[in-house]
Image: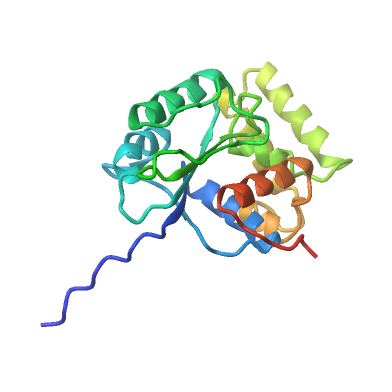
Length: 227
């Protein structure tokens, strides 16, 4: 009988995200900035489901892994940025992290604990650590300045929402906006990560630069600027 394959060992540096779209967008940005692949981007699952709850519930066990050196956490702020930050703060405090700020720093948070048994940790709240929102809000900031289709997409969505014709909930307005805009490009309905790779979205926008700097700080990376 063939020998059973051993499961692949997790990298000592990991970035946890809520879903596959987050992973594709982040990897596309990392490739544009030529960041070395010293960390994995992972979507935690719990009973077959993914999302922020699965990510948060799995934190204690993941942070106890013997080979883990650095753990990054990227989650949506959603409607309540302070509430999301507090839930992360409570979870990390219960594990042993101290001196967590009362609110997320605009440049993202990175902590190197004095306890040698705790890994280095970092947190980024989408879109920019300062506003409620989600991944799609972050991606909307990558739309090139002066783009003429962006305001048209916003106006059309507002029109159908005011008329009550939208079939999506208003909390998903950012998703509808970015995907409407992407549907009007030369290659319609391109996925967000692919749109970054194709440079339909701008990887040198200020928010992308801040996010990349947070990744470089967290994982102690040295990388060239995009050519």
